[in-house]
Image (cartoon, rainbow, N blue to C red; front, side, top):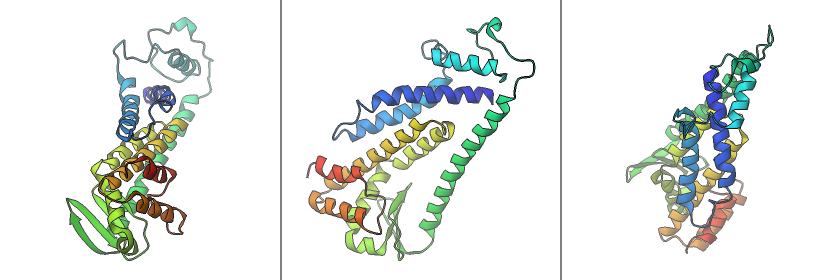
Length: 265
């Protein structure tokens, strides 16, 4: 468990060091794919690089990591003593407070909480997909479920859910938007993000990165809709109407409105 805690700390440090300067460099108009790949690369690197033992890629030489490991050892937490730490530098009490067990329990509770929340969301989506639909059809390998109730449209894996009212009013635009999420494999991005959130549930920057990633997803989906010949003016009206209406769905956000005016008509 101690090795996993150190891994999580290294992962969080790396993600923060990559993401904080990245937000000032990557977000440009119409660079949706580049921004998304950059964010995904940060997530992947934060998971993989802390495991590397190569001298040039190892994070053990970082002063922040060394200071944290010294603090853990001096607090009596049973971690493997790295080569760069001398046993003479270790000063521990005869009966140190069992911080390791307290930290381990708190960390484990956090990991399980995040995983349970995400699992509950996935199960809820599965129930919505399978229950209450009045008809279903398949288009290009994508299953579309129409519900009589006023359910908010969403997509997950290769499934799209839409209410009958939305299907009759703006079915083509909404389905194109959700289809874009599927074609661009945004569900896989969310699964990767969930894994990093579970490892770094205490790191606020992972949630900020997730917010940016979801915004990029919406930009990509909006851009795809406009490239299918949908009028930018009509689409922006749909986004605004859904955003201010009582029954909004996942499409509306500030990013969506902006995308209509930054994309080519």
